[in-house]
Image (cartoon, rainbow, N blue to C red; front, side, top):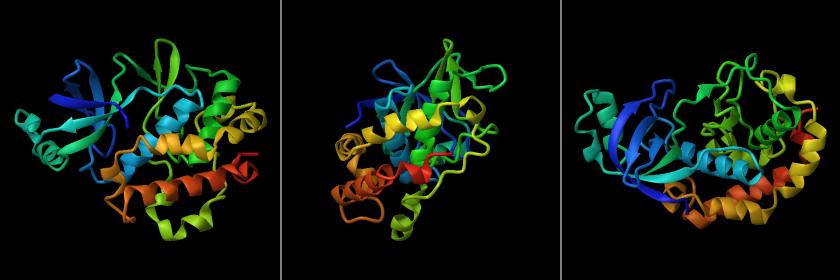
Length: 248
């Protein structure tokens, strides 16, 4: 399970995203960007955040710490925005938090050239998890203390929005035409040869164990264990044929 913290104060909304994530202070004195289970995308976005984010971490990509944020709707009392009040009230219980990086800048591909190795690793990872949200329009990358950080993976793993069809798209190729790091990703074949063999069933089981049972049991499957098995089997099958999804 991910580390668990308790929200003690809602600070402000981040209105860049359609799901209205918010900055929250927790009882451990940490500050987190919280994605709420009551938002329009629902718990599947939180599941994708954990699986993709923690998988990226184990593939040596920089992702801020992820935690489960326990939320009591009482923290919404001082919030004047009724929409946010309703969102927080609908999100009682476990939500997804990402360590807040104060002073981080949004990634600019012109101002921030990226090493070919790192750019290729990000691109191959995105191809594997089918990240449709890393374009130049919305990179979901931050620069913090001179380093690149990956954020916002709720739009990955979109096969899980249609489980009956998931097996038919397990080897779906990745469209990388507008990937923000494509100009710098000059080592894709070499990186893919390194990363693909690391995407084992054991690694995926380790990552899937971090997803709260209640998020997995809210949809599609009779139990969290059944859901974890479905994700593992799909992702293991995808990893077995990188030639199908690695950009050429």
